Length: 72
Image (cartoon, rainbow, N blue to C red; front, side, top):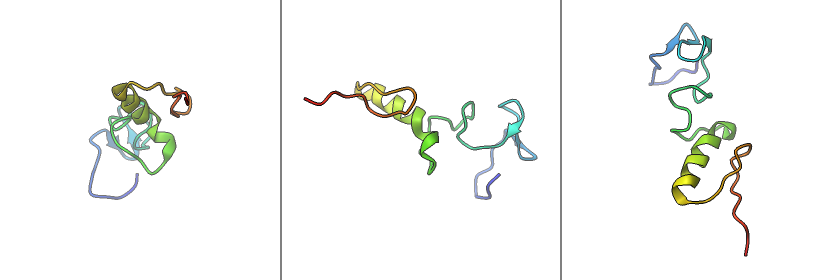
């Protein structure tokens, strides 16, 4: 687990009790942070981009999170 001012209540001894006791990786799928915050690792931002695109009414690729808007 990375040091910082925030501590996850699901992290116990470096393992995530919420996600099958896998090593804690903030923002991984199943994490309470998944899709809710922007991370430096772009792979963890796919879900957030999908949620924002739905709110804006644009299509987003589920694999990459890239916008699928057609150019005119």
